[in-house]
Length: 322
Image 1 (cartoon, rainbow, N blue to C red):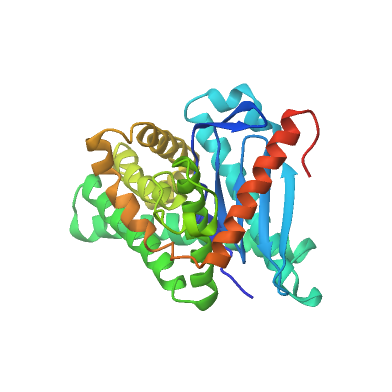
Image 2: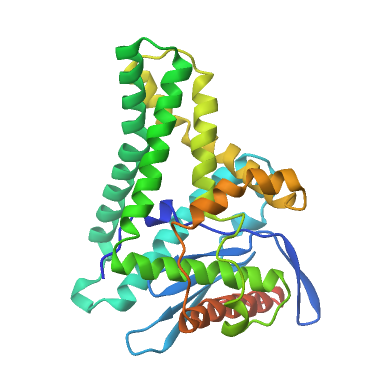
């Protein structure tokens, strides 16, 4: 099974802030969410992460591990910086989870590991930066040079090209059979979290009734990132092509920090009608990266969720989840 390794860039985490009663305690979970992986779902809590994957023989395989201590550090309380740290960790963890799940499905001689894995991931990252950061910047510069419009219009053209590439990419790969199934697991991840937040029974039948969309999905993060990039890059004024390309790479962490804080703010104010209105485009875009899951796929999402909760309780009581 070969799935595009750029997927961690478009299917990231759903985060929630909620109080969870477990083992007679209220456990604060500030980074509560998940991600679709190959034939499975990853769920991430505050201290532990769990992956549930359907093996070729039909059995559900569970893998749990402790999260990086960075999530407990004071750094994660610093606005903007926490977004950069969280995004990087999510990409690293998400890529590792995708690799682990893909290897579980593959024959031994087809597994990605060692130098072949690192080279493949490095190449994927370079292609992603070139396609979604540098190519739109080059087009924007070309539009300015040919039409003599201001930097604002050049940046708007760049943003439209970037948005078209992102939307086109997630739509195009969604037509692949393996990715359509991955999108079903993405839908299961959302439905599981929506079911939990509604305090409904955590069963496949119950979860099937809840929405595919979630306001804190990583797909929404990408749309916000594109909009923020237009605003920030417009402040830079006229630039040479070299500086334009360089700034697009160097400012990625800054844009990620801003987008993260905006996503966090809208998630905390979903009770306001205006906020619900402005997040609608985010929810529409998620229709491209989610599909209605079957009951057996929902079973995997719920298994990952329950395994993560159990690992969190073990961590609270002093043991390392694993």
